[in-house]
Structures are given as structure tokens and as C-alpha cells.
Image (cartoon, rainbow, N blue to C red):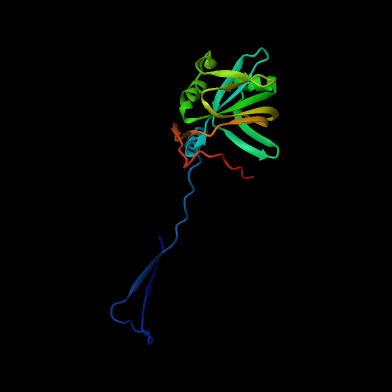
Length: 207
């Protein structure tokens, strides 16, 4: 560490009483943080995204023989209002993704706060998820719609599918919307919660 010592003197160069000493410390260069390993970075990223609460949806589709498939999804976003388009992210090895590819259509079931059990059912492996919820085939493609656990449903035609890492970005052109104002189910900080707005009036679209 380098020290610079200054003695304050009067105009004649004589010291005024005891010398006044000021010590300046040279700045020390900041040490860059050590690079994270891939597992450490993934863990840190999960922690980061857990602090971003979102709504909860069950994405559904069906096989050619009508067998329903679905999974819980919080990776959902609106893409554009003209035309109405949304995007969901689904793991590449998901059977629901395979059904979406085959059918060319899928549904987004937005869960209300009382739909937590449905979220848990479709987030867990199981041979008959649809046997645990009330549902019906909807529209010309027979896309499964959950009838008791949702505040909204969007029926979508598959518009684009793109692979990013170990997931697929599934872009859907919205063909039909059903919506009833209710308290949404949220997921954040690795837990479910109910969001209680000031009112449940019809939402206003802002493009």
C-alpha cells in the first residue's frame, strides 16, 4: 500500500505547530469475481427467475386419436396484439410438445387461485392427469379445456416452433378466447399464491 504524506506549512514555509498529516491510500484494483461453473450458474439463474412471479397456466393439446396431453407452464408471454399471438416454452422431450406438433394447435388454460391442485397435478408425472380434473374437448381440433379450474382459455393455432437449448419456443396464433374475471393463481419464490387485485373488472389492453 502506497502512502503520500503532506505537511501543511505557512506562507514562509514554516510549520504551524505540529505538522498536519494527510494520508492518501492508492486505489486497489477490484478483483474480478471467479467464473461460475455451469451448475452454479444454472442454480443462480433459477434463484433469479424465482423472484419474478407469474401467472400459472396448463398448456394442453391432443393426439390424433383424441388422447389429451398437458403440462403446467409459467413460461407464457404475449407476443403481439395484431394479430393476437402468444408464446409458451416447453421442454423438447415433452409428450405435450409432440402432441402440439402433430395437431398443429394447443390451448392455454389460465388458472384461478382455486386451481392450485390442477397446477400441481399437471406439474407432476402421472399416467392419467386428466382423470384428476374436469375437462372437455374444445373447438374443431378438440383441444382440451379445463372447465373448473380456469379463469381464461385461449385456443391457439401453431404458428411457429423454434428450438432454444433444451426447450422449444411455441408461438401460437390465438383463434378464440374465453375469459371470466377471477383471482389469478401465481407462482414465485418457488411457491403458489393468490393475487388479490383491487377489483376484478374487465382488463384494459395496452398495446
